[in-house]
Length: 215
Image (cartoon, rainbow, N blue to C red; front, side, top):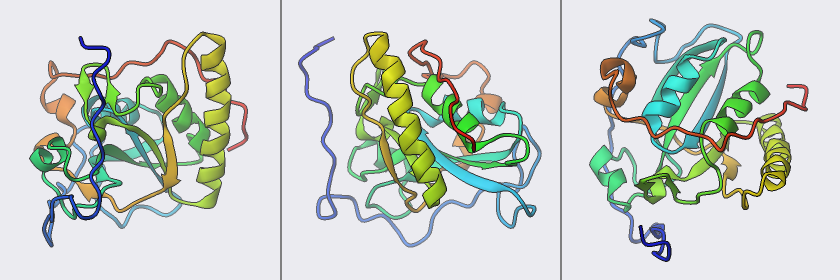
C-alpha cells in the first residue's frame, strides 16, 4: 500500500455527473424484517440516516438492532440526482453510501443508534474504510432535525475523547443536515441477506462508545 497516495477528491456542482429525473423504486417489503420499505410508516416511528462506508454491512448492523423497523440503502450528500451505483463508484457524483433507518424511539434511542454507528466503522479514515477507497465511503451523520444534530455533535466530541485516549487520530465524520436520500438499486437492498457470504467491510476501532446523553 502506498501510504502517501492522495485520497480521492470531491466533485463540485459543475464537474458532477448530470443524473436523471427519476430513480429506483424500492421493493415493497424488507427481506429480513418483513416491514414496508416505503412511507407511510406507522405513527410514532422516527427516521435517521448514516454513512459509514460500504452500505451492505452497515445496513445489516442496523436491521439487527432491536427497535429498528426497517432499513434502506441509498446515496446522499452529493450533486447528481438519482445516481446509479456505477456513477457513485466513479467518484463523480459527490454522494456517500448511506443507510436510512426507521426506528421506534420507545425501543431504541437515537443515541443508541449513534453508539452502533461509532463502533461499527473507523471514523478517522476520511474518504475510505479499510480497502474501500473513495468519496462514497466517507463517514457522515445526516441529522433530520435539530435534536439529532445536537446529539450527533456531542457524541462526536465524546467519541473523539475516547479515541484520543487510545491513540487514534482525528475523527473525520461530517455532521450535516440530512440531504435528499436517493434509494439504491434493488439488488443492494438487504444485500447480505441475499448474499450471506458477500463482502462486508464493516469494522470499528475496538473502542466502545459510552452513552452519556438522554435521548
